[in-house]
Image (tube, rainbow, N blue to C red; front, side):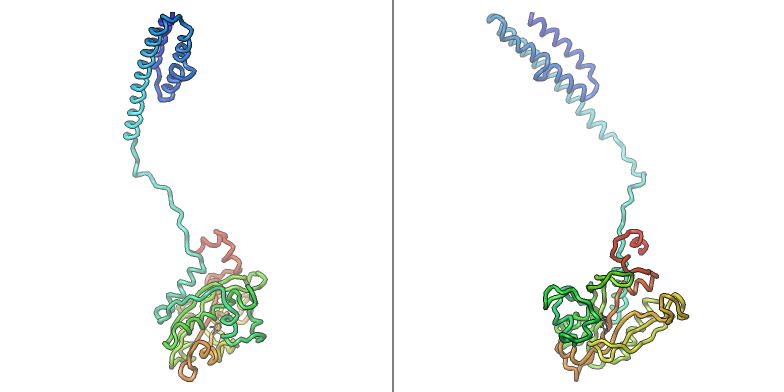
Length: 341
Ligand code: DAH
């Protein structure tokens, strides 16, 4: 009786295997016949309850059926595996289809202006020199001729880390670092970097912004060299026809000190809201390095002379591109950033 069941089961299993058309169907077949709860297992469980003399032949036959079913399962599985591999090999890749576009980032407008500034000053012999963003009071103020309680410190609202350490309020302390590094050789450097001021954030002022400082030290530099360098810079940055003017000013680390203006490109010098009806736009501060500052950097002011200037790349970009709010630079709005390519 049990042997009969086994034969029928084998027959049925072999027939239905032929009907399975996919690897999924094959797996279902295996579960149905050979699985732990499958039909063959069910019959095998019954062997224990047979009379002793029938048990061994039933065991033998059921084992044969099991081996036979496993064999045809393996064959069919191999067939599906090979077919799948073959189908994959036959898949064609259409190399003429357009690819997925790769999103390309762009340089930040501040970086673009900084690089433009480097490329104007590099042919004049200025190399880039890096200074620290976290400075000491000594470098940010004292060595630049601003002892404690000097009223000029009011020009720079400062983030203090402790009494003696602060976030630099300008790139000018880099002048001292450069002088100490190069002394007694002549110097021609530009010092770019981030600066910080403890100010209300408005359309015109940010707590973090860039500056780029210039410093030249030599034995025969004059105000004429300073003017020549800066007028050339203004022409290359804002266009050949740009008018420039120098106004007397005050900085503790230069004597004499000047501020440089270009004629307003919005109103062409006639006077408008942007230039506050003056026809001129201020672009930088500059001057002849104060003898005390030269001394602080290690140079003898009786032998050496220095010229220095400092400007804000964001301000330059605002004037050049007509940007009306400095906050755009650091608010990470792609609608703004993507306009500069
Ligand atoms: N450090 C000045 C500021 O932050 C700018 C400046 C003025 C730099 C005159 C200079 C200079 O090197 O000579 O306002």
